[in-house]
Image (cartoon, rainbow, N blue to C red):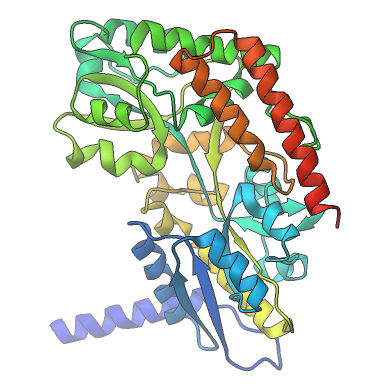
Length: 418
């Protein structure tokens, strides 16, 4: 009986895997692909299982995965040596930079193989993979800032739900602040820049102009965002905190609310803490929803002799990863695909399902090479205000914009045009 059941399960699995298989174009022989990614943390095994499942579903394509540290350097070195893989992961804000470094090439010619509908992705994360009107990458996931909360402290303060508006957030933070407890805790370092950028957009601003040639975070919206952050620190948080201090204090049980990346979920919720620690979407403090986010995107590396069959195989592999990104979400990511996020299976996965509304509010910088270099000046400016080493918000933001614009101009000379 047990043997019969095992055979039946094997047949069902084979049928499912066969249904997921796509065929190479006529005339193509079997293809072996190399796939690079930077998933050196606990997310790595999840991706490894996806690759194994893909290989089991195929008869003519096999994929060998390599997970690499110092990933950006490895890509650049391999490009110079002509040893790039067939398919690779890249961060959304680095797509343009690596495209201009000739690490990646346009993938428009395999979009038909992937059969992707741009409408199945939030517009901002889809746009992040486009450079100069050509498609260089497609989004696998979105990993935003989130709000972590101590549900026990919230309940003791009279709140049954996490505070998702400015009024509710300030009321809850105030109610939980007293004695040795803090309602909210925020640092002077990472992720303060990303938090500021979220609020900048919420108050109606943007980091750059539309074409990414000028920094614009010294706007009225930028001043409002930083004024609110400083006020929140003064009212609800311990001052002058170093990087990770808020995480450690939250884990100790004396902090009600913190903001950090979704990647901290396993560190500050569930069995990692001695209280009811939970995660949910980033709240709306300003006039509209917006939140900083990153995204892992899948790209087509440059090859000395591009091959139609290999490129088609890459398209089939990428399509498989996107269609099966429900499995990837279990690593703590939010699938970029709207249809995957809308599925009943995904909605049953927490806290990812509670965080998922952030996908439509996620912000990404313009797709301009080297644009992330400008954020160093922004991070220093925001950090100095939060640390109290600078006090004039407008002047500090103005100075950081001037430095950022110098970097942007320098990058235009460095990268040129395509």
